[in-house]
View (tube, rainbow, N blue to C red):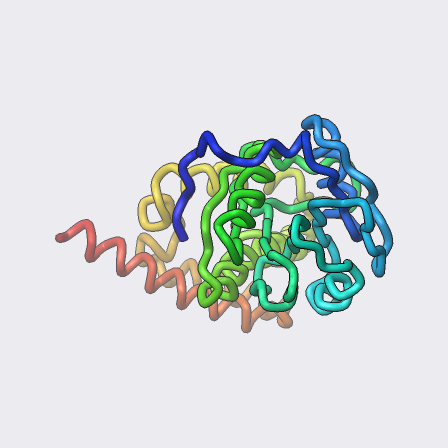
Length: 257
């Protein structure tokens, strides 16, 4: 995965006829963002649209529907077709000149999507197709990074861990806090500070708490409380405690070195 330098010979998207297929969260968000950025966009269109007038087609459909959506678009020499999947390679878009653009940002069910400032994984079957993906990223205020086909599943797994799994973990914390009469809002500043510290310092230096101090007696009391109040979370707690011990050990080794 490597970041692209901004190029001067990228295509001018304002001169292309574009279409977005897929009226889900991402399709609506990208359509609105592209229009705001000065690109004329048709859509978001329903699945199966042929996009007859478009020179640039962006498929914002579920991974399992990409091939069918691409097959509905008639191949033309001057038409490029892309998808927005993080884990899917470009072969499902054949025989079109293919590209992909995956914004590395969550798109909420409600409210506007904040894409600008995030990164985006891009790929292209040809240099021209990659240039289109890169131009799209820059037009949307995203930083394009190239992810090879063999790395896409790992890249997408990292995104899921960083976003979805984090939310799942905070949901667990919220449940335990509620058993002590503490609301979610009380945890929010702690979560934000932890993420900011991780971003600025890296995981080893951002880590705090009893496991870092080697205070296993406190960890045992925490575990006992979960066993009584939320026993279904014990397996998750134990797995995370083991992973945190390993991270803390790596931090101690690095500090000693």
